Amino acid sequence: MESVSKLGFGERLLAYLRERREDRGVMANLRSGLVERQHRRSWPLLAAFNGIGDHHAARVVRTVAGLYATHPKESASGDFGTTCRALLGDEERQKLADGGEPGPVSKRFLHLLAAEGNEIFDRVASLGLRAKAHNDSIPIHYERLFADLWTWESQPDRVRERWARSFWAPRSKEDAA
Image (cartoon, rainbow, N blue to C red; front, side, top):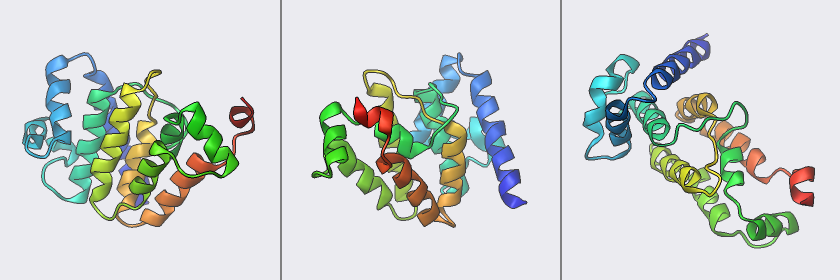
């Protein structure tokens, strides 16, 4: 029952973010939640979502809100492993298919999966910003990201395994191209 209420919590946060998507001032203050020395600027906006402080829940809220404010392009499916896989270039994708040495994105993804505790937030933010900067501006499934980051504290291996399957599982269409 607790996870259902927490997912409702994430949905409320995302509804709030979507409603304010065009407000440049609000989005600027929310982006500051990703920067350690500036994250207090996001507190007035995120207080209603438990976004104040350095505890796990506040870090989840600030990370998702900050990423959304920076990169509001959303996906309705997949997870963060899917997002990271989309960052792969053709050469690195082929190396993965052939079982070769990991390339730069694969190494960053492995670094993400190795995160312990609060390390996950900066690593997710870094790869999320890379998704925004990608040529095609790769979308992020924010509801799933919120739920996965929320779960990270109690079940990090479950999240790691889900993301790893999404990143490394063969894709017949994609890998044939």
